[in-house]
Length: 296
Image (cartoon, rainbow, N blue to C red; front, side):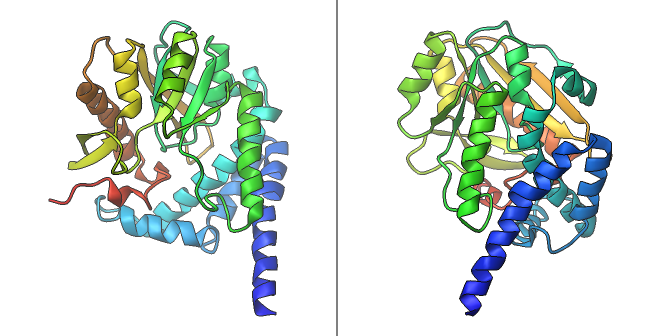
C-alpha cells in the first residue's frame, strides 16, 4: 500500500510540475507568471533530489556563495525551463523581441554549426534561429531514465518538448552515437545543427582538454571535429536568464574560419567560463559536471 501511495504521489508531482504549473504560468502575463515562479522556487522541497546533489558538486568549484540563494536560483531556472516549452508556442516574435537582450553578430544564413551550453534557458533560440534564416536540427544524447521527473509522465513531457521544438522552429533531433554521417549530410544539404559539448566525455568519444573555472576539464569534441572537417562555419551562443525579472540575455559569437579542433574547444570553454563566473547557478548539469574535471 505504501508503495502504491508513493507512486500516486510521484505521478501527481510530475503532473503538477511538468504540465499543470508550467502551462498555467505560460498563460499568465509574464511579469506575474515569473513572480509566481520565484515564489515557488523559494520552497526547499521543490526539486530537492536534483538541487541538493547539484549544490554539493558546485560548491567544490565556487568561491563564497550563499547556499540558500544558489539553490533558489537553480530551482527557478528549472521551473522556467519547463515553462519555456509552452511559451515558445503561446508567444510571438514581437513579444520575444521585447524580452530578449541580444549581443553579438550572427553568421550568414545557411549551413552552420551552432555550439551552445547546458547553461541558462535556451528554448527561445529555436524561433530566433528560424527568424534569422537558419533551418537547424538539434544534436543531443538520447534521454536516459527519467531525466525530467519521477514517472512515465516525464517521458511524455520529453516527447512534448521535442514536438514543441519542432513547432517553434527546430528542424528536428539527431541523436548522438554514430550520427557523424547524418550531421555532415545535414550541413552539406544547407541546413544547420545545434549541439552542446559541456558534458562528460564517454570512453569511446574523442575529446579535448580545456580550462574551465581555473581547472582542467575534458569535453567531447565530435561535433567540433565534424565542423572542422567539413569547413562549416561555427558560432557559439548562450541564452542567460535574469533571475530578477525573467528577461533573456542572448550572446552570439561567430568563430573565425580554419580553427583547429583544440582551438574551437578552447573558445567554447572560454565562453562558458565567462558565463559560469557571472551565474554559476545557471549551469543545469552541475550534478554530472564532476566527471568532466580532471583530478590534479
